Length: 116
Image 1 (cartoon, rainbow, N blue to C red):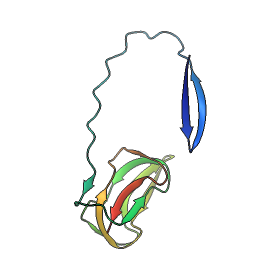
Image 2 (cartoon, rainbow, N blue to C red):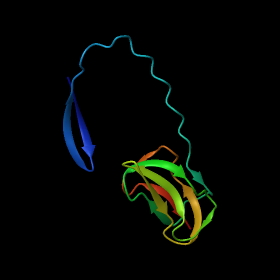
Image 3 (cartoon, helix red, strand yellow):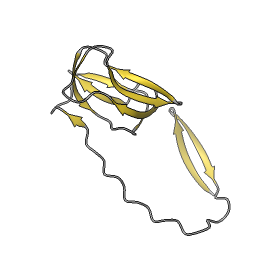
């Protein structure tokens, strides 16, 4: 039995995990970790932070660095609890950087993008 510490929404839990039964075959070798892509940026971060309002996964990136947006334009779409939730521009401006990639998990307050 293995003991792990898990933190969910800032609350820590000690969890014990026990393997049940023996594996039928030897496990396949682990794949090499995927190469992390660098954030997309116009050269420097903007002064306006666009953050995740809910925990979820980045489903689709709509805007790109250098793109002009108006307040309320969708920048990315988060998937949370089988719902698609748009993350919108808080003001008129230009996207300076996109700090995530599609499929990334995010928590509340996670930096999604910056704007000028």
